[in-house]
Image (cartoon, rainbow, N blue to C red; front, side):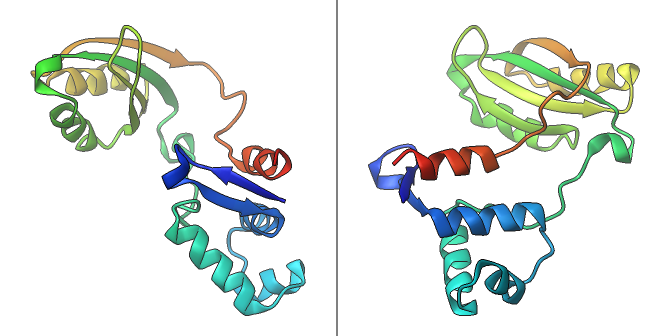
Length: 169
């Protein structure tokens, strides 16, 4: 089975069952080596290495670093901030400003009443005010609307999506 992932045909990446099994194994055991992957998947070491290299090259696998839990390092408050920006200046200056703020974990251009959606963290509600003040200090930001997350119901995940992509061909 082969599944196509991507925004359009030119950027499409094909995943098959072996790719999905390799991704699942690396997700479950991120510190596993290529040799052990080949043993568990019952394929040659060279096959695993070639598949892994292609998945990285094509941008399917974006990294092998540790998955950090912000609360475990003192950032117990997670919030989502919608920003309205001055359109004529574009998104890039605001994105550069946001990238310089360590508590901004991600930012996405969005449709709707806002222009950017950010996931941010803070040490406390009082610290959240400091982070928001730092965010809105940029002249290109007109307004911010903040939602505080009370509890994480489903952590960030992609494995169900990978499994679904290889089944729906």
